[in-house]
Amino acid sequence: MEEKRTVLEMKHITKSFPGVLANDNVSIDLKEGEVLALLGENGAGKTTLMNILFGIYRADYGEIFINGRKVHIASPHDALKSGIGMVQQHFTLVPSFSTSENIVLGLKELGFIVKTRDVEAKIEQLGKHYGLAVNPKAKVWTLSVGERQRVEILKLLYTGAKILILDEPTAVLTPQEAEALFRAVRKMTAEGTSVIFISHKLDEVMEISDRITVLKQGKVVGTVNKEDIDKKGLAKMMVGRDVILDIEKPDVEIGETVLKIENLKVRNDKNLFAINNLSLELKAGEILGIAGVAGNGQRELAESLYGLRKVESGKIILKGKDITHTSVSRRIKEGISYVPQDRKGMATCPNLSVAENLFLKNYITHYVPMSPYYLNKRLITQTAEKLIDEYSISTPSPKTPVKLLSGGNIQKVVLARELSTTPSVIIAAHPTRGLDIGAMEFVYRTLLQQKAKGAAVLLLAGELYEIFRLSDRVAVIYEGQIMGYTPPDPAYIEEIGLMMGGTKRMGDAV
Ligand SMILES: Nc1ncnc2c1ncn2[C@@H]1O[C@H](COP(=O)(O)OP(=O)(O)O)[C@@H](O)[C@H]1O
Ligand SMILES: [Mg+2]
Image 1: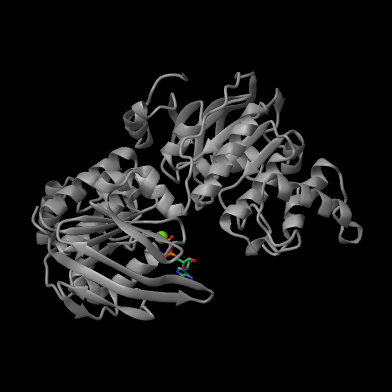
Image 2: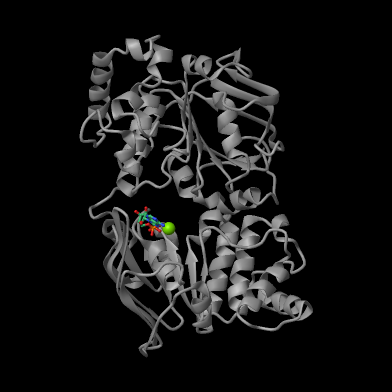
């Protein structure tokens, strides 16, 4: 096979932020028409490296070569002029402008003189060519997240980017949208564009890339050809040790209905109905996975079940009791636990110690006074020591402020506190988001243990593989309603995707 031409080299890139070496002597190269995946856990330094390439950050040290020529990229403008385009994790479009106006804006900045009419025609043509159609006249605020991403990509293709950086692009997509994106990427690379694809998901990296550079704690672990490695091997490179990717579900008899939600209506912070007539039942010993694109009511559902958000109408019934309008503390006593998605703001008090954070709920369940004049220090320390041991929380001491722990260990603190009370209902919202694979495994095992003990678990997760791995049933949420149910089997991915996109509704519960 003919050796492909190298279009980009980043050599010895080093970048530190206060207290972190985000990129430590990182070198990568990119060939014409290939997909290079940058794979690594959260915080590995992937975005930083690409922000340097796109001119958002300046490296402390290191060099960049494009087509063998050394370049200095001081701004995104410089990057675009050199043919490098980046779709960032958080999009940069102007919501009140139309698709074409957004693209015109980008082009004007680059000194192109264009007519909106011509731009519209070209957008339609590019959209058709790559299978990324968007309406050029639609205001960006009316578009779905998936469509906005298409606009970002079309904008870069319009400027003639030959190196396209996609930073965790599938995080906001349905499976069908992700497939369409992959087809577009293949078309681009077939035409000679090179793509750097950032991800922490092994499946999609194995699907789309030609080569993979693995980053860990700011350093390159290695670069491999896709043909020479499998998922297990990649996981090991990412984590630095063997990991178990398949966890067995315990055989648990599903019991009676513990939680019943009837025609629930709940408003979001914008005062719109985020939960719109939602009904579902959750049984003892089952994990019900709620699949959906982020922002379809998942947060409001979790918060209203825990008593943090007012219910407009409908009912929440826990073990036969109507708890729709009861307080959080009442619900905790009745056996609801909540593992929220925001573990630093919502789930823990960052400045309190590990021991104090572990104890936060006990004043409700055990009526232990929490007045500062009356804190039972010994009980707090004893409880903490037991839980630190049981949940293998890695902390210098029970007195360490929780904010100094790693994400995985903070999540263990939350799980230890929420699950040590033997809850009958657990609401787990994105319980592994941002965790490394080791901590993820721990969370999976813990939730499955709770299931084995007979707890009913409502699992709200963005990642379908996580839902398949843990759940007994899958429900799909779209605009605050349950669109349907499927078994937890990848064979149903197409149906799930259609329901996630709101284009299909399935019959009754399976
Ligand atoms: N602007 C910034 N200021 C301070 N620290 C940062 C900044 N951007 C990234 N970091 C830190 O650099 C490290 C690498 O982050 P990042 O490149 O975003 O990782 P990844 O994209 O692989 O998840 C992390 O420890 C992160 O907290
Ligand atoms: Mg990142």
